[in-house]
Length: 417
Image (cartoon, rainbow, N blue to C red):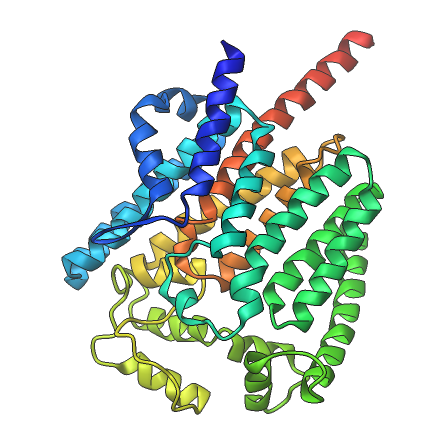
């Protein structure tokens, strides 16, 4: 019976992964994987999962609270039905997908390998599934848009099997090299995610105990070498050795190319625009999809960038999960998303990263945590429907698993004494 349940969960997860690139248009675009999760929802024993997994309770309560304040914001702003239905469905499908994935990953924890392999195949064939207009329109970097998705997944799978054979240093080296290659090919954020993942794995595998002094020293050391790397990167882009159109354009706009914060400003100008829009309506936000009714923020972007190539899409641009929450649903929306993501990241470090176990899942979860940490500040809000449910489900399931293992180990020590 258990084998049948495990096999069914594996099949469900593979089907979910393989259908993330098949879309159905209903008001907005739905991934077919979301339809699978929706149809399965009545059979998932939601009340059991809600009681058993603390993380499920955090995610569900947080997203429902966000949905409530989003409804208030939409009513106040007079959002049109097409916009608010898309905004509300984003929350609902994030909840449904997360519960679906928690249920099936908890039935078969090893199914994550098959799930990622199916994801790798679908990304290799079709590219990453994405529902966010900001990413769809930023198609100037072929490597980032077409190759990074399946390369990331392939590298995480490789890291999993290398960890099985205790090749910890090789994983760290691969992450570092891949991170540097991404930096050279204009996928800067992806490169930083893998570099910081490598640093975390190095600290873990060398059993370096972190206190306030060591944390300060490691931070200074890391920032120093990152800045040296940044200077090398800028010089290489300026001289035409590496980089693409995006990086050359952004660096040419900077008054001081050696100021990384200025590059961040031009690289994530949408997040800057969001801040100005939030200041105009900080309490309730602008409603779902935040319409730029007067064109104010379109002209502001043209002014800030000094470019006439800025496109007017009719809504306020956003490139931050947290700022997007604030932009769409006000300060309480921001607080709810911050609470959810911070709680999940704390669960990772407390129950998984700090565990005595060196599980093959560790490099996968580390990359996902670093990716979500970046997404909090610099990735589109649509990730709540795409990558967030996978991140949340894996953290919830494995955090609960390692918490139980740690309790068993503590009880065994007590009995031995």
